[in-house]
Image (cartoon, rainbow over all chains, first blue to last red; front, side, top):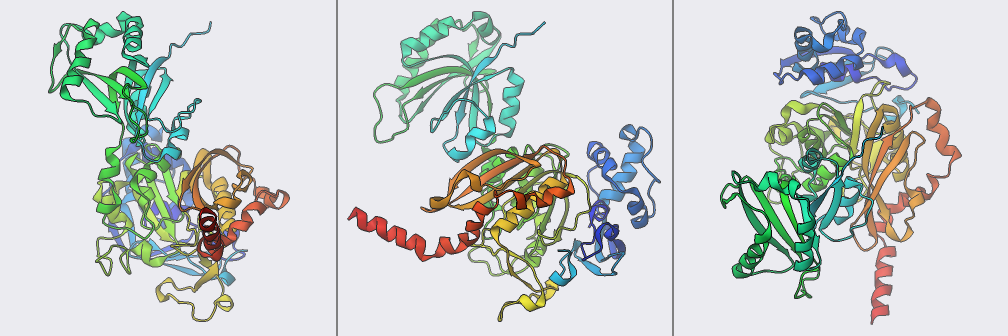
Length: 120
Length: 448
């Protein structure tokens, strides 16, 4: 699971609503996966990122988007690495409100809940 | 001051496949029906080339220099084509060749040579080069569509300068037959490219498939440079485990998963993530981040329609999948599924983003009013593909035209647009049942 994905995921446990974001990430196995750098794609993603959630999930992240980031290759490469190259293979995502754990195995999060747990 | 736009005429040679899906792609105003020859007015050659970079429905495009219903008409038409438009391609330093294509008829080499000779009146000054000419000119003769009734003379003859070919070879290179990881209902490669085109997928888009299965639809989007996400409720499919769909193969191999499929075509860099998730209970945070949602939801026939449910609701004997952690049970009524899909699209698509999906219909009862509707989404196209004598599926394309306000979730209660489709909840039963068999029996007895 990439950190870009973690940034877009939220818990849908019943009653939790917007407090289900961000999910608390506990990674037990991480791999760095080289991905071809595409500055245009990374620049497109920057406005979609919830920065506070990203800072919680990763250590070496710029504190926020800098002025003129679209043309700042150093910044974009850093963001590219954090968002797309860090791959969580095993771990859990925890709902910050209910504590419910969603497992990640083989790089794939399992977000399934039973009916009692989900919002109606 | 208004600028006049001179439109040039181009001849598009269509492939005789997926006839129902060709039209919306071009959004032409004239009806061509079954003919493979379409004449379009396009402002520039660049636009024509760009069209061919995307289409899997068209074989080639030509700059149309003349056409007629007989050789004489064709030659007159060519004589009327402005010479200054011809000259850049015919001058003495250039090389060229002329090809004769006939449709629904075969000509001998002699007959072909005669036709080329008849074009001597054209001001060709360059040299003929049959191997690698700079310019290729084509004569296309249309002998109709009926192989049992081939006319002596063609209905139409066209002459044009070849510009570009379409992407038909993608259908072969991305063929499901050669793909590492397939499922029971993997989408035909040609159709998956048509869907990506309907979704206007372009470079650096994010495309999502909420019923991703083995990821076939993601491949076409990745081919056009989009980054892709997929979810599916089936743990085994997402992980690439379990029984194989190929004849002669029992279990899936280690290289069979969605990521591996993208890797097979050199598209792995476009793989974002896949998740095990229930499309009726999505886990995405509030926001608009998908440029397109392209999907083939289950119809309940070869793959079951499911969603997660509570323990109490599981019927006896229902299989429990330990790895997925939750019992999977409730049948998901088709109309609810489409309502959820449209609502989800309205909420998470960027403005101008598209939703492309298949809608199964029981043909005897189908009316246009049944197509699911949403206040934020505008219907762009609706193309039918027959599945059997009484069922078909429709490729629906919608575009987000209005920002999503929470209250839209409830507007379906006010409109009866979803009620007509409710009847299709029993699509599965109708597909298998006595209704279809009885109708078939009745038809047979009326023919006897």
